[in-house]
Length: 318
Ligand code: SAM
Image 1 (cartoon, rainbow, N blue to C red):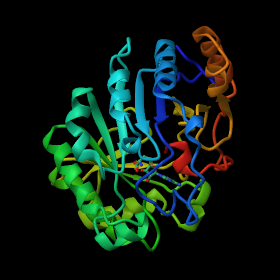
Image 2: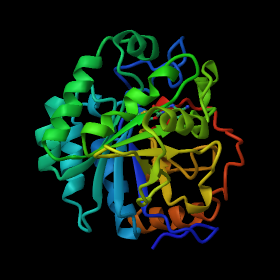
Image 3: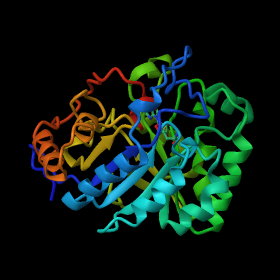
Image 4: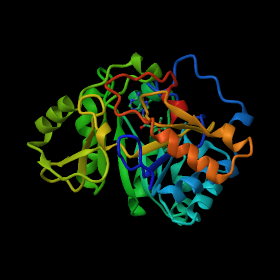
């Protein structure tokens, strides 16, 4: 069991497979772009696999692949397949922008990735291009349909943005009206270039959905930070993840591994452990396990609305 200095059990690892992305979401990537990591700074397939294996042996039960865009990493599928064979069989999840998802879906399902989150902030081609800089909405919608038909445990994650997708939030929520899926609204966090946009507090989002669909009914919570509701006539649920207005740090069970081997202890803070140095200087599995346990004692208790890591989200992994 992995426990941090506040007594929280750490069971959830988010692994960023790459700092590259095929989209340029304005709140995630600055307009001038980001300096890409050098190839040799990125953990190899074997290094990633080793770290994940060690963390699973210590008590991690859930691994989520993210990025950048995880599916643009060359050999991403081989890595995911190998993680699925790790002793201890963690549950495998993927967070993706959905652009390349349809083509990878059969392989992902074969590697028993059953939980897929697709990030989608709009249903309008024009707004999609405003947010992401690309014209790929139709591919994402095809991926949504493909996942649904394949019976994936599917979540759509949307970031509400003042003056950008504000009027579309009920339409996004309506994806859960006809499908048994979760549509979740995530409050914009002031990380890196996100200051270019203004987020919308989830209480406000909920009011606008209540206005559109009548009073919401509590739909219970699942494990994780989202509070769920549903509306009359909805097959699925609407979730609210509110790191800004209702922080959930006391329940945090997660750590993040960036693609350059930094184990981040908290999304908001630079507190971390450089695993790449250990991996490349002959540390044994036991050395790495000990370093992780020691580092976890320094996992911050909460972000207190102070986001002090200067990485952009594309380099952290969402
Ligand atoms: N490319 C993948 C994707 O789009 O899902 C994975 C990486 S992306 C960084 C993961 C998630 O982080 C996306 O849902 C994105 O909307 C969200 N995100 C990025 N910057 C954010 C911010 N400042 N506040 C809240 N969510 C953010």
